[in-house]
Length: 371
Ligand SMILES: Nc1nc2c(ncn2[C@@H]2O[C@H](COP(=O)(O)OP(=O)(O)OP(=O)(O)O)[C@@H](O)[C@H]2O)c(=O)[nH]1
Ligand SMILES: [Mg+2]
Image 1 (cartoon, protein in one colour):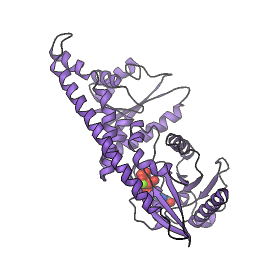
Image 2 (cartoon, protein in one colour):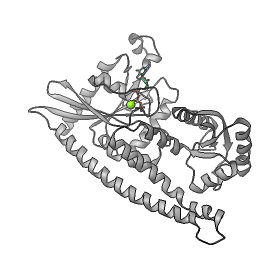
Image 3 (spheres, protein in one colour):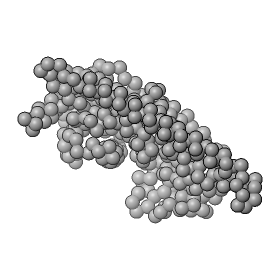
Image 4 (cartoon, helix red, strand yellow):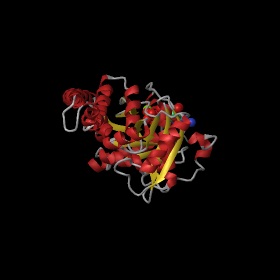
């Protein structure tokens, strides 16, 4: 894929923010083995209903693509089905949006049966509205005005198949959910005199969640410098006190403009988050955009109904900011974070003792409140 990236900026989204977002979009293209060869930003208060950007600008995209050999144009925001069709006709190129890229990455990474089902559900839910009207367009090529051509019938059949498959996947996912609940109940059965707490590790993609789980519990996890390395939740236990067992759960990473289809589809997996007693919100503080990322993650937590849970911010990758563990204590405490925040390096195990202490404190506080 040789792609040109397109975004808009306005009073709500500054030009700088739009550019950052485009840079991240370029990362998604790379994650799919593609290359982005340039980007276009337009100042628009509102997307154009037909072409998202202005028609003149859309026409230019065709010329630019021809000049640069681009075969794909990727938009940084959700496109409506008719925008996709209009843009493809005008530019003679494949047109994708951020949702398409994220779903494609998810589907390449999905390994477990559950993850595969969830991704398929998201993809079909995303595809369904795009089939509306496609039949009319197809039949216009063949039949006369107003006739039901073969294209329309084909689209109708495909729509029906998709709806049936969606229904079937949802049923299978319900089963998965039941099984998960059952497993969870067994796992959460405390031994005599033991307390069990559930801690969900959440955060922006690539923040270091899986690395942290490995550091905290010794559980081998897959971590890699790429978006969405983890799609499946993994739970692993560790006793923090002889009578206190913590179940840590690693989860799928979040990203800006995460397609609602994906959030909806991954609800089975993400149930671990809404069931948790405590959330560890992992943040990559070596990334300039980390405050922004925190905001995004908070918004998604809200969608999952987990916004009121106690949170500890785990400010990770501090080894990229200072050279030694001693220097960490000289760093100013990020006062603008409300709530508890601990600076750590999950990779070098810096600050991990502090983090464990903070977890125990949080747990005792809860116990006091409960008693
Ligand atoms: N320098 C440094 N790198 C780290 C640290 N923790 C994680 N990383 C690196 O950051 C990258 C992402 O780590 P992961 O643990 O896969 O991140 P994740 O949050 O699980 O990412 P997704 O599952 O893709 O959402 C990997 O290349 C890790 O080696 C850290 O403390 N310091
Ligand atoms: Mg991970």
